[in-house]
Image 1 (cartoon, chains in turn blue, purple):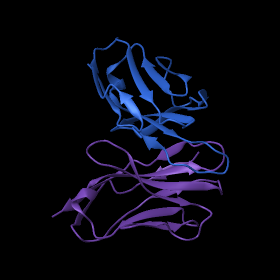
Image 2 (tube, helix red, strand yellow):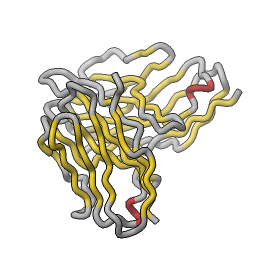
Image 3 (cartoon, chains in turn red, brown):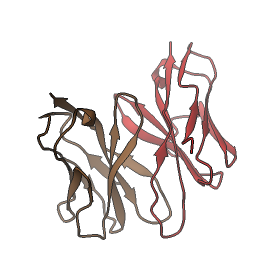
Length: 116
Length: 115
């Protein structure tokens, strides 16, 4: 199993540019999560999907952030326009959501985003 | 709202010794789960151990064990026979029971292992 795959691993962009982060969950997992990690705020959940449907996007900081999951094997997190304060490591995680079963969240390697 | 607090930003332990990392949480729920994740310099988040709130027995995984005190809302991680590879950031996390799988993380404890 390849695990959760994220791309790119590193992204450096200039303020105002559009940034798209990509995630491929583990095959068969039906829940997907986007987290952001910064020194100031630690690890925080941005949004999560169950069966490709967004369930909780209360962590999305503002309208500049959007996330999609067009199918079970792919999700994107887009920032438009990007700002220096968006610089962080963005993690994608996936798990299996089944009634009565607590399953582990498997994390991807993260994307380190730097906005200049 | 649920919160997770790790009061030790940094800890240090000698190789082969034992160290305990602290975590407290706040919740009004009775059904929940607690986790410890390890994040080495590679940034990869790795699950170390988990505890179901309904279980009285403390979870153990090889050299890793927890002290789960439900009434005190405390969930500490004990690492025995510390190894150089244990050096990492450790995060305590909470997950409410039921349909949601949302994890709430503490701020982390950076563990250094001295040779």
